[in-house]
Length: 229
Image (cartoon, rainbow, N blue to C red; front, top):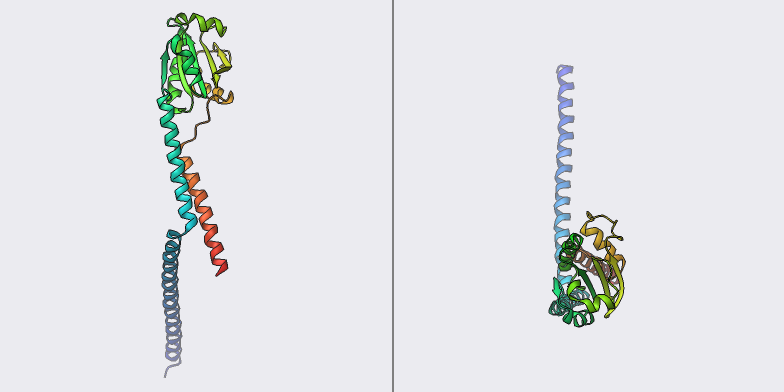
């Protein structure tokens, strides 16, 4: 046989052996991957079954439901007291309004004052977002007794009440940069700083944080259970 032909035949056989080995290795790797995926799926099913019967998870869920129910009851009670909207009251209503809620913001205004209208706009925007604080307004011209009693001399005058006691006030726009173009966010930040409203948190953020905390505790429980096995 021609030496070149023999050499070519041997090379082809060697290449064929290499390809066959590679094919076997590839099939082996596929089988191992399928086996790992099947095992992972079974473990996930087992973990889910365990979690569904996990007493700690059930307690977390029950606690969350109870907290949501309590919060809903509080919001309903606040709304019955006039929270959640920016309302006008009369002088005769004043004492009852400021003493019936823990935190009250009362705007003493004048119908013809442009800056009072600006303050109205911002307070009206904030009231629905801060249901735990009552937002009201009182026409200073029609409330001479309380204007004198509270020494209201400059309008707009926003008086902050806590437990029926006047604890602070905004006189004109001097705490808001002294200009008419301040934003609702600026007023909100000032009221938060004075402690008369709470910083508003987005409900989705609260739910995500609650879910993350629950997940961490559940994962810790599962890991602890695995160690004990």
